[in-house]
Amino acid sequence: MERINQQNHRPGEEAGYPELVLGDAVLEKEREVLYWLSRISFLGEASIRKMWEKAGSFREIYNIEGKAWETCGILQQNKGGTLEREKRNFSAAIEEYHSLGERGIKFTTILDQAYPERLKVLEHMPLWLFYKGKLPEDDRPSLAVIGSRKATRYGLEIARCFGRELGREGVQIISGLAAGIDGAGQKGTLEGGGSTYGVLGCGINICYPKEHYILYEETAAKGGILSEYCLGAPPLSRNFPVRNRIISGLSDGVLVVEAREKSGSLITAGLGLNQGKDIFAIPGRITDPGSAGCNQLIQMGAIPALGPGDILEYFGIKYEKKLSLHEKNEKGLAKKEKMVYSFIDLHPKHLEDIVNESGLPLSECMMILLDLELKGFAVSFGGNYYGRKL
Image 1 (cartoon, rainbow, N blue to C red):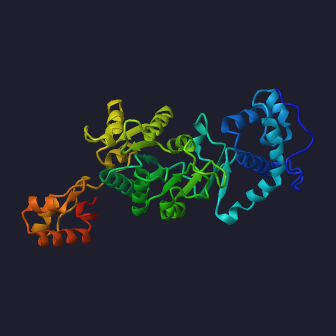
Image 2 (cartoon, rainbow, N blue to C red):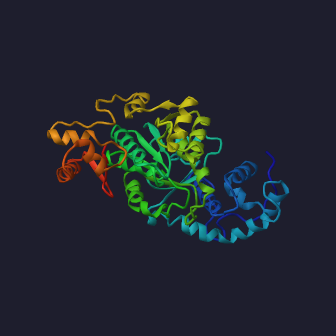
Image 3 (cartoon, rainbow, N blue to C red):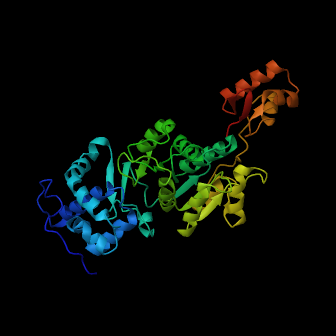
């Protein structure tokens, strides 16, 4: 392909780096320029890819005058001058790049062996990734667990249960660390001793949402946190649909736990479908708006997931657990405990209703519910509402 006219200066000269031309040194120069490009907000993945194809290398992108990129139509008018001004920040970018390790942050590019194989087949693969912890292993099964941010208690319990059981069996869980279903599935994975990976729609050094800070830290320690956005990039709403292609791209299948009819989770499911991934969905009541998206996916051909075993079977993993999602081993429970347990389910139920249905005195019913909580069979939601714990 014909090259654009180049300037005489080279990347790194202002930073005091000598020109490196062989082996690993050349790769490092490519990575440095990619890091610099990652900090330029008006340059998207598509534009940088076109520039790369035209220039022949990322280093040569730096060498080419900004006006030339306007002339060939890759940059809009006046953006060439902005790019030239960004070259003044090259030294600062390189200094920041070489200090990432001190902050526990790693940077990988499509030129590196560490770059995830699953992403290499995407039409719009990210050209780089920032990450903490580690990247998903290419030779282990992985599943995206996604759903509504405003999930019901039922949805949260299902996501947590699936995450726990799948993680325990070695399935990597990929999600967005978001409130609701995403976070619940990832918490469950950590409970099961599994590995989970959170893909952010902001800079890797920003925990979003803030209330997931503990989950953010645990995920980085026992799996990984990933982002294609530069350090300090805010969690803008437009970033999340873009990052969703990475969530589905890193996964072998996509599980939607709870989603409304018009939900961002359906966008991720659609991306997964376009990427050739199988889509799983948790069926819901037809009168429940929060499950309308899942039911619609099943109607369109998604695989109904009635338990973790359905997904493990898909991955060819033998699953020994015989209990269903809706029951625990009740051995060891006293007769009245079993009775009260039978009157609660995953949906919160008021104490008054439990008393009326069981026929037990209020004080006795409260003591039994407390015992069930302590034994891990029930959970209190406050306001005298109780439900089963999976």
